[in-house]
Length: 275
Ligand code: SAM
Image 1 (cartoon, rainbow, N blue to C red):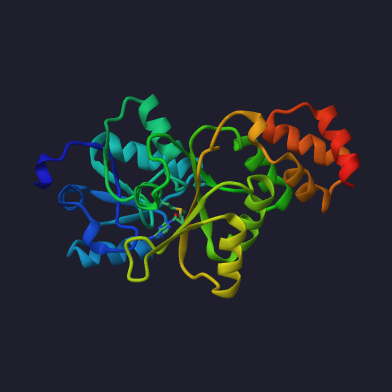
Image 2 (image 1 turned 90 degrees about the vertical axis):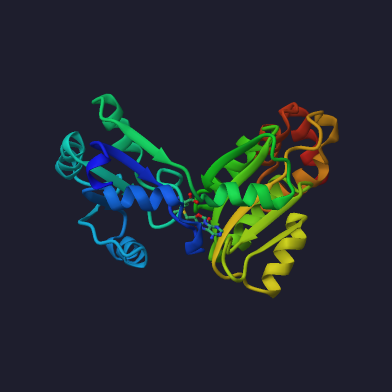
């Protein structure tokens, strides 16, 4: 096997919790590579140990120094090198984009081995429409920026998929409740692990549930598509009231205009009435 693997970059997806999800092909390729580039050498070292493999590990992320990336690229010209992230599919909210981009520009052979990715597990598990979805990675940390991104995505006719962390879940559900109050949301937690759960509901109900039962572990958050693209179907008063709790009528009108596509002046007039 070792001789048969040709030089190049091998992008290898790894389990997101259940080690049984490593693929046969991933093990075969990991056995054959000359080196493994990874985010955290301890995490990947443990996985390789579990597989009974020992390989030179090179720490890599997209903020790596230019000369470190160059060394890795030079190595791929003559040897097979794997790229792994701590868990799941590299490049999906994980390092690798710059490496792949440069490798492709230089004509280095690239092979991507499919495997676990939390976004895909969550979309299949959630019961939300799976025919069209938009993966949006992590929302910004700051409240204003987070709401802006949600407003930007409000009219996308697709299930929205976000990566989330337990400490931020409450703030994100609150933001969704303000910007997209009528949507069904799914919280998919600890996927492929012992305490896996997927809980669906209205943002406010889920926020209340998780306030009473603080969540642990890793989370994917999904938001159902708009029920109907007809702007008449937005509960404009509810959206304006939510925004008026911390914004002036003009700001509230601007934000709701972004979400609904409705006329800003009309919304401003209504915001003044509601204030
Ligand atoms: N590249 C990975 C993938 O393909 O899924 C994602 C890496 S990203 C840095 C980590 C985020 O993925 C977590 O914060 C969480 O949102 C999601 N995630 C990873 N494993 C998960 C799991 N077992 N259950 C739920 N979400 C998970």
